[in-house]
Length: 189
Image (tube, rainbow, N blue to C red; front, side, top):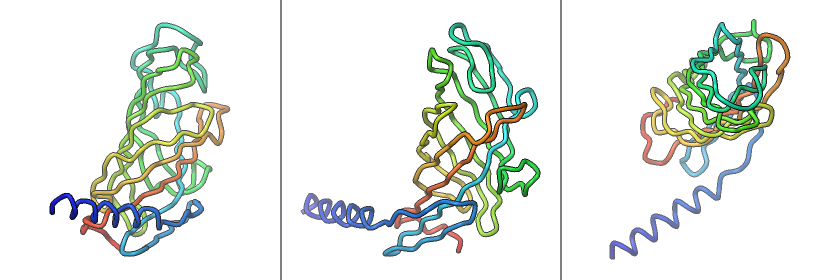
């Protein structure tokens, strides 16, 4: 009997997940409610300035030198970067991305990243925690592993894509694809 109930629950959850429709991302917030499941899709821009919002804590041991896109293998990097609504650094500040990365590719282009993104949006505030592999010059998907405030119980992923890798400050587009499971009762609308 327990197995039969478990199979029904899994079937319902699988059907609900397959029912989500893909949506486009922009800096605008898109709320979706489909069969009682809430989702939110939007984009922001992360601005990282070496030796101002991001610092090398431990320099790595092998591979290319430090540049706007590479760090030696094993480099430990910490950051606290502003997040804005457009690629222009002077646009409205709506969040902070803070975390660390360790260069894991001998080519200096890949790292393992951990970040907490604190957001103060028009209808949502709290944080989203992500972890995963980052490629410095290509889009990278990072799974959401948790959240606080209005993002409590959130699931989904965040895509980081380079926008501007020249100059002192590099800019990344951060696309959020967030989903609240049915049991999450702490949501704001």
